[in-house]
Length: 393
Ligand code: NZQ
Ligand code: ZN
Image (cartoon, rainbow, N blue to C red; front, side, top):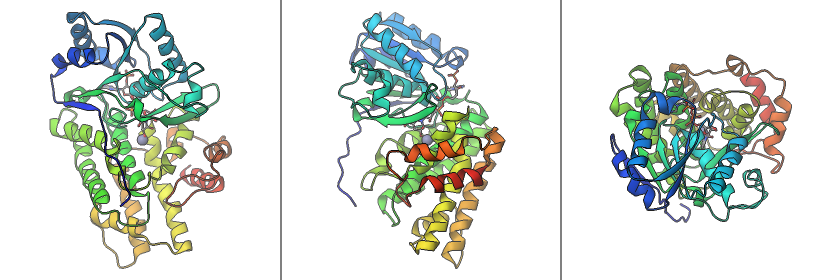
C-alpha cells in the first residue's frame, strides 16, 4: 500500500428536510451568495422556493445564475465570474447535479485568476485560491459534491476537459435522497453507471489485488448493482435513493483511491471526447465505452502475459462468476458488466446515441496529445482509442 494523507474536509449533511441548517452553514463561509442552478428541475420540484425562502428569511443577499447545461460550458463559467465581481459576491451555492457543481468550481477558481478561466481548465495556469462553495445535491452520479474535480466544455474549441484542486472541494453538501425522486429513469440509470465507472477506474489502477481498497470498491459495486434497478423501477424508494446518493459521494471523494496509484481514467477521457462532439449523457457514454476499453486491456493482457487478477476478482467477488480458465472468466466478467448496464436500459453502442465515425480520428488523437498515451492499467495509444471507437460504433 502506498503512503497517503487522508483529509476530506467537506461536511456532509445527509437526510431529508435539513435545509433549516443552510443559513448557518453559508454564514460560516460568506455573506453574499451566487445561487447557481440548471434549467427547470429545481423549480418544478419546489426546491427553489425552499432554498430562496431560507436565504430571504435569514437576510442573506443573493444573486441567481440559472441555465447551467449538462456538460457545463465555459460560457456559463465566464458569466458567473462576471456576476461575482459585479455584485461583490463571496460564496457560491450550487443546487443541482454534477454539471451545476462543476460550473460552480470553475467560477470559484476563475474568480481569483487574472486571465480567462479556460487557462485553468487546460492547465495553462494553476489554481491558487478559490471562492468557497456549498452544494445541495439533486442527482446521484458524479461525486463532485465532495471532490475537487470539475469537467468543463468549450464549444468553440470542441473540448471537454477535467481539472481540479483540493481548493475546489465544497465546504458543505446537503444530501437529501428524496430530492432525487424526480430524477428520470434515464438519468438515474446513467448516474448509476457513472458511479460504477468511478469504482472501475480506481479498481483498474493496478494489476494486483489492492486489499482493503479493492474490497471497499467491490462493496460499493455490489451496492450499486442491488439498488440501481430498484431506483429505476421505483423512483421514490428511499433506501435505493439514499444508497445511490451516498455511494456516489464515496465512490469519488478520494476514499477509494487512497493507498493506490491514481486510477486508470482512460474510459473517462475517451467518453469526454464523445461528449465534446455530441450531446450525450456522460453515464450513457460510459455504459457503451467502458466494456470496450476493458476488452482492449484483455487482448493486451493475453498478448503481454500480464496477470488477470483484476478481471477475475471482479468476476468472482462482484458478479459471482466462475470458470477454470482466467481469460474466459475475464470475458464473462465484461459480458456481465454489459448485461448490468443493459438491464438499466443504457445504450451499448455509439450508434444508439446517434454518434457516427466522422470525428473518430480527432477524438482518438486529442486525449493523447500531451502525454502520448492514456490510462495506466495498460496505456492506450491514439490507434488503440480509434479501434475502441470503431468497435463501439
Ligand atoms: O438542468 P436541470 O433542469 O436541473 O435538469 C438536470 C439535467 O437535465 C436533471 N436533474 C438534476 N437533478 C434533478 C434533475 N431532474 C429531475 N429531478 C432532479 N432532482 O438531470 C440532468 C442531468 O444533470 P447533470 O448535472 O448534467 O448530471 P450529472 O450529475 O450526471 O453530471 C454530469 C456532468 O458531470 C461531469 C460529467 O462529465 C458531466 O459533465 N462529471 C464530473 C465529475 C466530477 N466533477 O468529479 C466526474 C464525472 O466522471 C463526470 O465527468
Ligand atoms: Zn464519471
